[in-house]
Every structure is written in structure tokens, then in C-alpha cells.
Image (cartoon, rainbow, N blue to C red):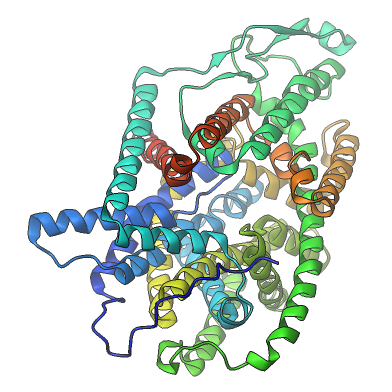
Length: 608
């Protein structure tokens, strides 16, 4: 069972004590940094389907900003607890992409043409996120104080803060590394955009012998047509360094299967129309219209299977821990004044629930009973998601949404809007709930007041909703034309859209042979999830990651190649210099992702 490290946390500051925590500058810094970093997550979410936990980046940038302020304006030192509040607010804002901005919301526009304006989109993202924040607050005492679940990102942030404020040189070294990686990635992205540097296709051709391909005059297909090449960017390199070799190798394997085997097969057999395909370009968009179905089936079945297994295991462990801790029921060592007042919490939960139901009915014409069911399902699933996150560090957001989509296939059959936006409530709330619990874990280890963190989290999601919604609308003003293309693959959007289409229209609208491919891929996803959960830790490292395999089906192949390169570089660094890798790998990777994303956002907005 995963637990927190057995080291004592510093005592909680006395009520009214002199240690600053919830200061205006701490919250404002988090809102500012988180608002900017939310654009990075919107960009990377629409590009590659991944968002990044920005806790460490926000912590380092806040430290550096106020260190500079101290030198220029002689401002008071930015203390550890102030930086913790900054990090809590900033990570909440940066996580706003999980409120639907990179998945169900653009999927809704692609399916129905419906798009919310900035004000209503901000209100919707805020309501979904606040619901998740409140659920996370409600779970804190059980999961963090009593059961002491690990929440790895929270522990990592706490350890880094301790190191930063006990060893000033370490903080400066990490901050410089972050800024250098941001600058290098941003400069490279600017050069790519200015000089229009293309993906360099790998040499080689595939022979097509099918009668359909022959009748269309398509005898061979180049590796460049299939997307195999080297891209002049480091976004995926940074991602590969973060996710590890197993996931990177799985991405590459998935690319070989999807684009090296299935895509040529689909062309040869006529499952994809080969007519009018330009010979000197990548054929991602028409081919992805077919490959996404087995890819989505693999990801969805694997996620749901893993979720069910994890939920059962987690509840069993929770029952065992509750029996162990009954004699410690009053333990916690916290003064009541540090808590979020129970009455205020209950009233906030009631208000947010009512607002969520009203917004679903007003904005999306979802029936009241269905909207209420969506919120109630959110409460139930967020509890499970919080436990799974605490044990593994991974929030099962995709699985949460898919369960709700499956439920609403029965509650509101043939209604893609209800299917997507009810699931948006569940998935978005689970995302913020997980982020909140990681931040609360950090605060618990460092002696912060939960009510101060709650306040900063609310301000953070407000900043994220305002900035993230604006960024999304400016980046993709026409989702139906821009998304699920080589420029914006948007794999999460493709997945949510595909599931909604399947539940609303049935299998008859799928491309030829897609049903068979999806059934086979779904079986593979179930098998891989069972193997991963059933094998020991060492053995499971050799089992391909089903989510990464499926993701490769909806990303250009060169993305997988770049991610694999990043994973190899991080692995080599860890083998040759383990201490250096532990200190700097995450910082460098976060900088590469943030640097390319920020400059990419700037050029995308300028081009728009």
C-alpha cells in the first residue's frame, strides 16, 4: 500500500501567528503564473492530448519572481508557505484544461456546431472546477490525514520546497535550468515558425498491391505520407522525458502498428479512399478518420478495465486501513481554526450543485433529472478517482468521462450534447479534485492551513477559467476545420467525439472494417490492463502501456518518434548520473513543454 514518507511535518503555525501564508501577493502570483501556464496546457492538450502538472514550474517561477523583486524593490522574502499558496493557486489555474477545454467542449462543436462565447465558457469551466475543488476538500481528512495516501506529485512538490528553502543554491540551480530550457525550446519553436521548417520525412516506401489501391493509381506510399519523420521541435521530447521509457516505447510500437501496418492496409483494401491524396504531404487527416476507431477502443477499454480493478483494490485497502485506524479516529494534530468551516463547506457544495444543474439545463438543454444524475455520479466517481490518484499518482479522468458517457447513453439516448457535457462535469471535476488533493498533500506535509489552500485554489480556478477559455477560443476559432488534423491532432477530442457518435448514431456510421478493428483493439486493451494490474512491478515494465499504444493511433507517427527520443535521453541520463537526473529531468522536461507551448500559442494567435 502506498503511504506518505515517514518523516515529520513541521508544526502548524499558530492561529494569528507571524508566518505569512495567504497573502495577496502569493495568490496574485499564482493566478498570474497559472493563467499563463494554462495556455501551455491548452496548447499541449490540443496538440498531443497531454497536459502537465505545473506545480513545480509555478513554485520555481514564483520563487524567482520574488527573488528578483527583492533585489529591485527590496520586497520582503517570499517565504515557503507563501510559495506553497502560490503553487496551489497556480497549479489550479494551469489545470483548467481538464475542465473540458481540450476534449468534450471542442468535440461538442465538431458534432453539433454549438460553441459557447467567452463569458459562458468561463462560467462553465469555473463551475465544473469548483465542484471538483469542493469534493477534494471533503476527501482531505479521510484520504490525507487518516489514511495517509501517497499523492506522489504532492510529496514531490513538498520535498522540492523543503530543499529550496533549506539550500538556496539548489533553488537557483533549478530555476536557471527551467528558464534555460524554456528559452531554448521557445527559440527553436520561433525559428521553426519563422522559417516554416517542415517535418523531415524518413526515406522509404511501402508497396500497395490491393485491387482498390491499384485502380486508384496508388502503387506505393512513402514513409512521409504515413507520418514517419523527424520534427524540428521539442514538445514531444519533453513529454517523453516525463512519461518514462515504457510509455515511450509503447507509443513507438503503437505508431508502427497503426501507421506502418494498419494505415497501408486500409489504403490497399479501400477502407480509406486513396483518391486525391497529395503525393508530397502527410496523409494524417484521412487516415486518422479510420485509425482512430481501433485506437479509441483500445484506450477506452483499457482505461475502464484498469479503473474497475483499481477501484476494487483501493476500496479493499481503504476498508483495511479504516479498521487499523479506528482507535486513532480523532488523530490529526490540527487546530479546528485551520479547517474549512463545516457549515460554509456544506453551503458551498449545495450552491455549486444547484449552479451546475442550472447551467446544464440552460446552456445545453439537458433535462433536470439527467443533470442531477450527472452531479450525483460526479460525487461517487470523484471519491474513487481521489483514492486511485492517491495510490498511483494518476487521475483516471478519461475513465470517469467514459463511465458517464456510457450511463447517459441510457439516460439520454441519441443526444450527443447530453452525452458529452454531462461527462464533462464528471471528468472536469475529477481533474480538479485530483489537483486539489495533491496540493493539500503538499500543504499537510509542510504545515499549511487547509482553508488558506482552499481559498487560493478558488482564486486559481477563477484565473484559469478566464484565461484558459480565452486562449482556447483564440487558438481554435473553428474546431470543426482545425482539429483532428496534422497541425492539431487533438487526440482527446477525437476520443470523446468518437464515443459520443457511437452512442448517438450506432455502429452503422463507422468506416468499413472499423468495427472489426475496434473489437480486436478493445480486446487487446482489456488484456493489457489485466496483465498490468496482475503482474508484479518488475514484470509489468515489459507489458506495453495500453493508453500509449492507443494514443499513437490518433497522433502523427513523428510525434511518437520524438517522444521515444526524449525517453531514451532521460533514461541515459538516469543511468549515467542518477543524482543529476533526479534533480533536473522533470524541470528540463517541464521547461521544454512550457517554452514551445508559449511560443506556439503566440504564433498561433498571430496567425489567427
